Image 1 (cartoon, rainbow, N blue to C red):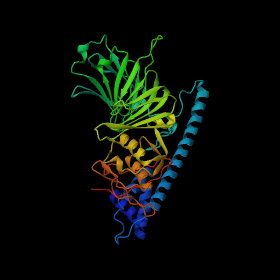
Image 2: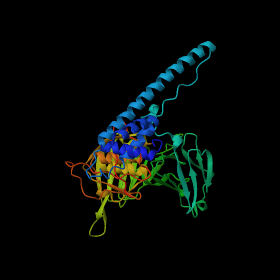
Image 3: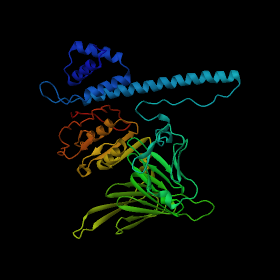
Image 4: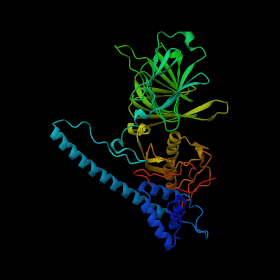
Length: 449
């Protein structure tokens, strides 16, 4: 029976609940030897996720100690595997060096690092997400599009007077073809470049401007920009922007980036921007920039690296006019560009900010962001390859109440009393795996059918 995964998971659930008989314990030991370390850990996670029903007598099941022991075994197994791999690499390197000495030639390259499954590759744990993985969709008109994936190379298409190219480094370039004419933009006012969940894209525009889009973001490039000194863009979601620098001593043009409720003007500079329906937040990385309220009621300069400006559209005034609230703080470059890294490190950040970042990357919808509590803080490290369950686990450990059903996450339920035992966090039906980051701890809870 132990070759049946469902039967083994039932043994694990009984073990965690403290109801497994002696004969079942013997079977469980045999099953643990039958399945590999990573597969066994995932089976344990799946089993723990189905313990919301409690014991047959109705008493609650505290499965967290069992989960902690399972996680400890899994980490120990990975360390042993890494040590074994390191020893194998040392032995292989010694053999290769001996062969090189014997042949009198140079040993090319170096050993490839070990990839730790769902965790980030160890050789680039602090590096950026590789450009080779970039992907997006290029739209123009109502229905015409180019899908850009990891395998796309060379010239992908032509849109009026623009050629769309994807280079070997993963960047997407819009290159002009000859002299633009007014008729070239008829019926096609803008090219839209959109990313989906789990996607990022670096776009190089004809004037030299570079825009890196985060997941679930969009860049609009009007075709009438061609041949003009001022470049006008629209951004939704999250992006980093670097204004193009003119060659041969020519004066720099002006770059205007519009968001739903603000504009950013710069000639030479770089910044990150998060653009939502009623909130725009920019962090200056280099040069200078100016942020203007959409209705011209506010103006704020960004002068020093790390200047962070947030413009929020508040409720309408009695006369029908919208008001803009401005907040000015300071943010480090590493924090501002955290979403570009393979490992996203969060240290004492508000839950609402964590949820906003994760929902953009994973693509889950939040019913009402105003319901996400502002008080709890989260410290965690999340790999860009980690499953969604890890995010839910971090929220669970922060005692944040949430439910998930049909792709929609809601935080609008009753508040949690931190003095009471934590309630289980619902897991998604199709992504019920849990792979913890190096610093975070988490767990999983019930599913909603």
